[in-house]
Image (cartoon, rainbow over all chains, first blue to last red; front, side, top):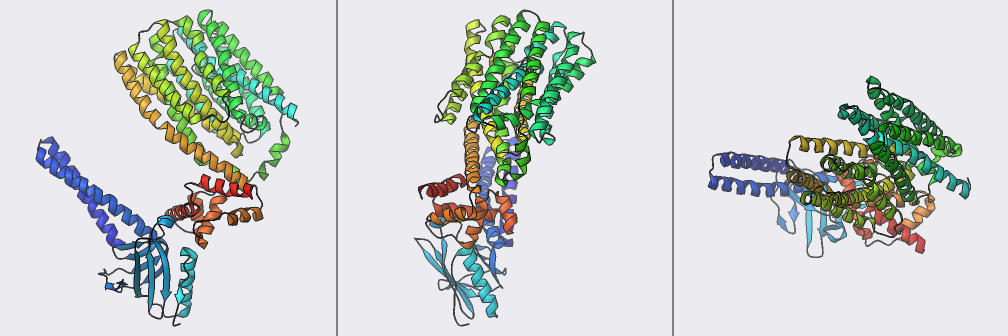
Length: 169
Length: 470
């Protein structure tokens, strides 16, 4: 989340700087430079809007966290994901992995949704997707007590309607 | 109260308000009697007009703070009009500080009296009939105003003043005769919670009213001065198109789509400004411009007055709701007036002046249809929620469980749905469930998607329709 916010703030500065440059240069009639900085500011504005949207989703995921996993390398559909040092959050509306987001439940019944959840002694396996694509993510959950696992499963059921399968406990 | 007595009370309340409002239109609130008197004695009018308007605005806005029962409303109306009557007496003498003092006092008390009528509109006019009562009071008061204006402008302003005071006196008598339903006052506490929360709808309506009336204020300053030389015609024809438009709107079938008529009104206002720009300042030109402009004002005024009237059903404090709605109107007229005066003070030629005015009109009117859509949606949703709220707990559970969803709701979504159906706003739901407002919005979107609807109003109507079919 911090990384997403940092990146968003970067785009804000970039947009403002380029916009100011374009304005200043327009006073001295440097048309080519105005065009260049104008284009860059427009592009940075588009990135800013996108990043803002990402930050909104990230905040939503963070506010509705169900399970917070300490910093580990999760495994997405068989391949390892590059992950920053921030913790991983499993939430009502998706997963937050540093600056990466996997969303579900944000676009109604036709969008990406959480399908199944499985919790074993070490890992939690989450399957999510829509009609076009299904993804599976597994990661160490860091829970050592059965009570914690049951509470997590109950929260998942309450928030997402998905009954987690608990095996090996 | 039986049907006949309600009908009589309704007539009585319409007459009481019409006569009092005629005084307001012809004298206190930028009335021709006041203008004629000020012109006759060569007194600078702007201070007087502005003082009366500002105090009237304050009266409308604050009246709801202390008028909370029908009995108090009746007393405030009678006392307010009585004070207005006394405060008008100094206008028979030479100008003095008493004129300004009189306008300040009567401006405030008349605002309180007008807002208090909200209680009687709610009590004596059945739901869905309020458009007719509102049309009636606007038509009658404008006819009375025309009579007073003709006398004041063509005979003598003092006779006009006597007539407008006579209107007020008749208004006091009719108000005095109004019956007061004390049982309803005592039952007030029993009103359900849903009926109290109309804040959003009222804010939206005020915005709507404010935008519309900016144009009226602008029109007073831009168009009226150009036809100053047609005094005789202006004195009687000015409000005729307004009255005709009100009469047409009043008698439209209930099924008629009023939002479409708003577009006609919009075209009429634009047509009026374009005609004003292109035509000369002859009698026929005035008739065309005034017909288009005041006709549109009639359409818009009755539209928002009737919505305000229907809104009273969901309010425990009709005087407050009615007063706030009308204060938005006065505030709009004030702002439009200032805008018009600013445009005029620059000293632009009339064509350029009309173009500027037209641009302002276009910008403001483009905002009207989406505002109207939002307003209708909010009111519709409120009506459905009130119906739902009146059901028993078992009925509520039954209708929710009866409707098939495309996908089952999660427990969290069921919690959110229950609170939506109890009429709570997103913020209130967020506070109740200890989650963020954005989370509530996301859950609400998901619920709508599962019920295959696009709004709260549609959701509740789907649930209730199912109940009716069952």
